[in-house]
Length: 253
Image 1 (cartoon, rainbow, N blue to C red):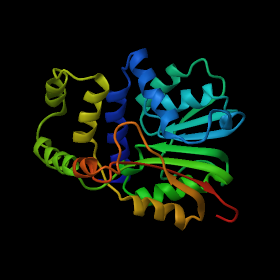
Image 2: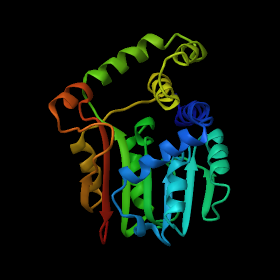
Image 3: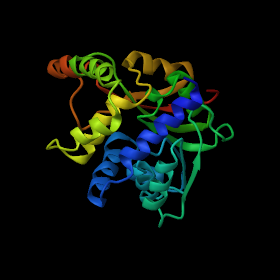
Image 4: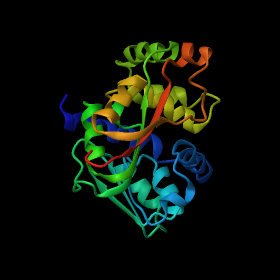
């Protein structure tokens, strides 16, 4: 499968999964942004920001509300871009375009803040995508990424389930999942885990290595709301868990 095929299928899947949230469900998604980016509310005022992989558009909305001077969002899914455009219709600072995280159409050091959550692990090369993100960040700017961590019983179960559902049409599993007594966000997550074409998993040391390779400073893992990755039970169930990492680009990086 070529990179273009992967991106087309991934964009189609996410457009289908995340385009129909209600306002309340969308607000719940948008609230995650503030909890996963350690920058401070006033930090965004007047900044040029990039959201690489807009998905539902929650990060775009959050950055615009925090006073960003401009927020550029890219995605490979037409449906995602339409949904994000609808959600941010009143935000004059938001710009949207179709593009891949592996080939960003921006000059070097174009942004003060670059955000990429839940995208790199769905590409043919997460490391190459990280290097593109870093290239577009100015000296002194912040880069925030989120990727799946390796290990744990749940990731093993997901890998097995992906094999089992491979011959089963997406619409059948979607109909089954729609009957589960869980939130729409959780239903979308299940279908995402099962049907996205590429799903890689990483270690914290590997992700830190991406930052170190590009000369970043102040690299830190940000705690998220779902679980405490340092607890033994969490490690057993989720392994490395969700790795939310950020760093500051230093001179010469």
